Image (cartoon, rainbow, N blue to C red; front, side):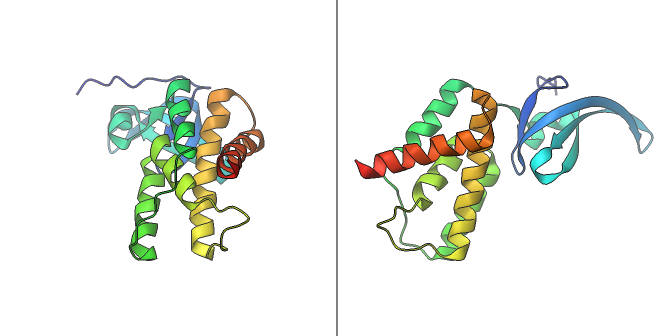
Length: 168
């Protein structure tokens, strides 16, 4: 398989289960007697460093940041009507976690939209709140990286979209 995914130190990338990280280096290591090139990716939020073999980058789901067009589409999703299925919470929670871990900003926006609560709505359960905040943070980190703003400003922007829509 030809490897089409290439990035350079300093580039921001998205790893599905960890969100936005920064490529800090591309290093060569010997693993099990084989020379292997690795992307070294730092996730400041989790104080974690991940090494992904260059040849496995695409298969692992590692991707470049979304384009502005993709992010605009995800933000448009936030303006939509919440869709909650009438299934048990445990099943929905699994689906929401899978959407968040997919790394797809469109799916993550759906989770944020569906779990967002207005002041007039009933209080969320602890697990609902955790999943909502996890999705909001993941989406905010990518919005921040794409728009070159800090995470707090990105979260404010998302909250404004959510509250503006619900006030209408």
